[in-house]
Image (cartoon, rainbow, N blue to C red; front, side, top):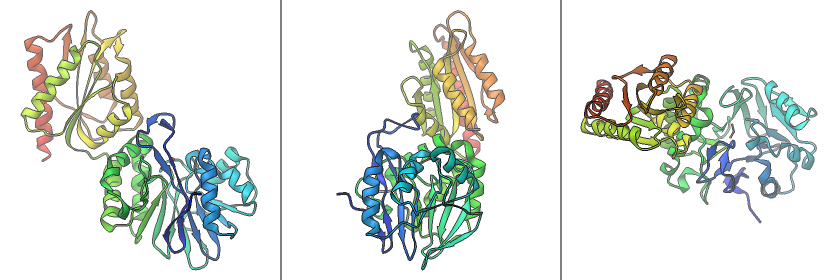
Length: 400
Ligand code: FEO
């Protein structure tokens, strides 16, 4: 018997942990799993905030029914329709036929498209309010954080933001669900990985959402993934993480992402990294694109201002995994990065040319001279790699 967890006298956590799924959205690795958070507010009227992935509906309904304690469910507020949250909506309507589904116009369209539900759907507008009794809810439409229908709901009485994906993290909730019950630092990197991979393309809508929330007094942030943020410093911290990431601001540091079949391109990466360290850059992260899930590389590219990409020529093009990584960077409209590049070839070079084309298509500032090696690294090319590392370090130091 799985019990709901009481957050405060009339607010219950009825979410679940997923320790089975390998890839979130079938794309992003989940070594520490993920939680799908759902909350029940019990007032004169009862309101559920989002549901959970359908694979976990049994556990979810068990918790929900226990938390309701015989009361009927009046509303389900849909802050986000992605099926990791709306997945149990069809079953919810079957179990609670009177429940009103609350969302905006775009939500209603998706509720019909995904679940064939058109009856008893309450469409609300931006800043509209819904009284539950003691609690008064207010809806804030925040499109594209992460889908067009996304919104946040603010409990004006207890100053709680039900934020959807925003401020969420990968990683299950192992016992503790509130930031007071765990070490929040454990989740920061997974928050950045969630943001950069899943929401990363939508920096400007995230900025608009933050602006919209900026005047609210917030005592709790109840996201759909990861811990509930309640400690004032933690609330400030997670909001500032989102602010920084959505402005594409990076810290001093360099990600060197490279492909290498037999180690020659890797030697170039090592030489550049060596010089960066010599020049006093302490955050230098080398990623072998064939070995490391791109999800982590993207996370680090969001964290640091410097990016250097290296690739051997493969079938007269870039190395496939480098090409794939670059498409992910482009797809996220990355900005504000210092960019360097290098490559190698055996009989016909094209990788460096293609990296130059990539650079032209971005809003990155190109730093240093690209280095291209034929077959294996000569002493001159080694020096050129050091020069590239030095140029990057000098550019970074200008911002100190
Ligand atoms: Fe957690 Fe956009 O879904």
